[in-house]
Image (tube, rainbow, N blue to C red; front, side):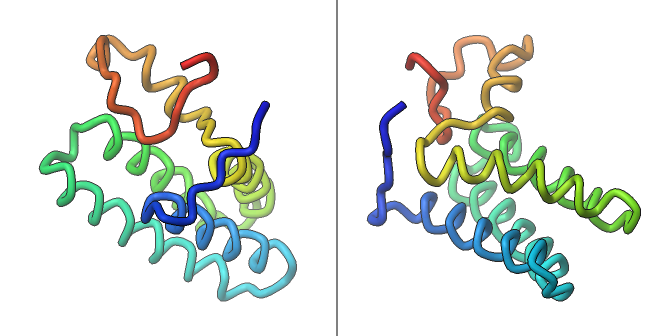
Length: 123
């Protein structure tokens, strides 16, 4: 796997800042969880507006990620939820690979969706 860091891309910056807040939250800054939820909501809305549809592939990835972020509101599972999000976000930030995109790509309503923001292995 090759590093693919694109600091000129707003998408990359959204993911990088998200990762920073996840790490801060998991390191003990409890406000980081709330900040991350707000950041993910902003990114979800931003990309919904940018793509012109909540049903675009890029928006779908962000909606699923945001929904999983909301699982962090459940205190008992928060650390596990955010640890999993951290691993996935590291993959997006460093390697431009996204597990959510991989799963969504397999959904019947996404057949032929080639405009994925998060690249898939081998593509």
